[in-house]
Image (cartoon, rainbow, N blue to C red; front, side):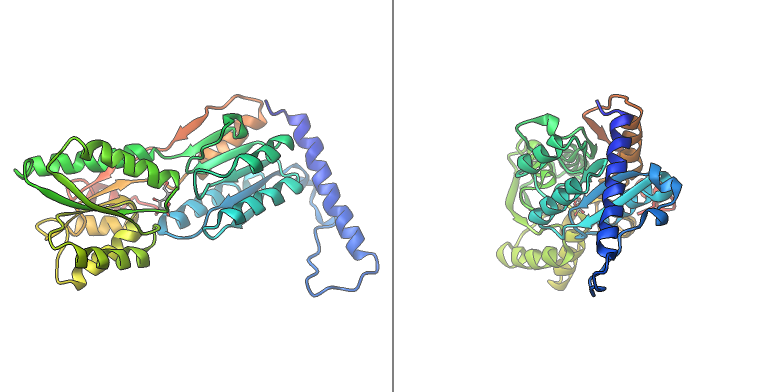
Length: 347
Ligand code: GZL
């Protein structure tokens, strides 16, 4: 349980250290070109004394989804909302995330929020955060740790259910078009290998695919959630396999690249196309392709998790207990329902 008195005491220590650092730097040392004066006490408004200091480690900026997720957390964890955010973008490197978190610990932040690039490799750094009495909140993806008490909660999505939704949509669509017993050749574009999202979306889709012996997953290939990699890998798949019926892509950015490759090969996608496309994320530009019949179905993955993270922090500030996981709501978009949502989409 995290209580207010510890927060304020530690908080003053943090601000005091910042002031001390400023005093040391200002005592006669020549102005270094890298001199970055920390706020002096006089610069810290009285109301900043009460801000909740939050270290935020974002895994990267690899996709449209990620940009929306970053916007969401930065909008929620802001000075206007009573926070002092310290933000770091790890650019898809776990070691940079670990370094950033270690920096947050040395700065004695009040909370650490991080979106883990991959599932494994966090035990040591999160033990350091626990030893420093700093609560850790996961955003977006999951981690695999020996001791689940190393983080307070996760605010994110159910990637396994997203994978299953993709499988069940394909099952229904093939039955609806009298192809339920046809041989169906499938290529799967996977996101960052070792991320909980790649592991769980793959497991969810396979959970359904394994029920259909006439579904043949020709290959599942890593395309790292990016458009360029999605195009490159799909070009390879088109050269390798002549009769791909379905593309299952674990995010829209890879889908955009894959569709380019398919079209460059003289083939079409979507409704009445040569290759059916099931995508994931449901970002606005992908939903436009759903509306145009270029993508058959898009499984939503909601990046707007910042407000929920802030609500959890406020609960902890009030000494309330919080759940171990908060899952955001998600839909499946097809040409049958996309029109009613397009005008209200925010990412
Ligand atoms: C999903 C998130 C994934 C998105 C991708 O929870 O981690 O990472 O599906 C993003 O677009 O790159």
